[in-house]
Length: 83
Image (cartoon, rainbow, N blue to C red; front, top):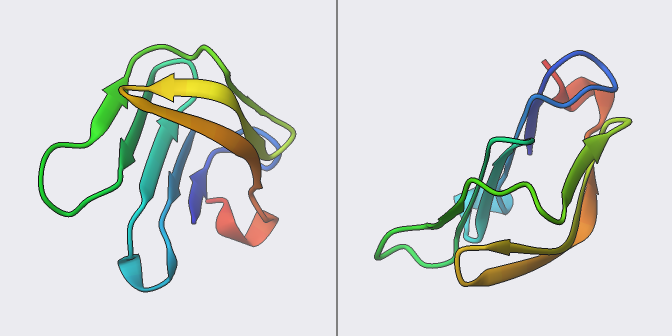
């Protein structure tokens, strides 16, 4: 996971699995979201922020539709992951 922004404020998040396995999730709050589930083919993308909130060092997905993918859950950015 890579979070950028001041501590407590997220500007950009890239979530990858261990060893760069898929899925890959990338979010710029209020601007862009992307999910890549398979190595082949294009990722699912969205310019809608519906269902995605970023605050207090966390990104929450509440039935966020990113292309044909629906994402649920919360990811916390540790202070050492922000930069």
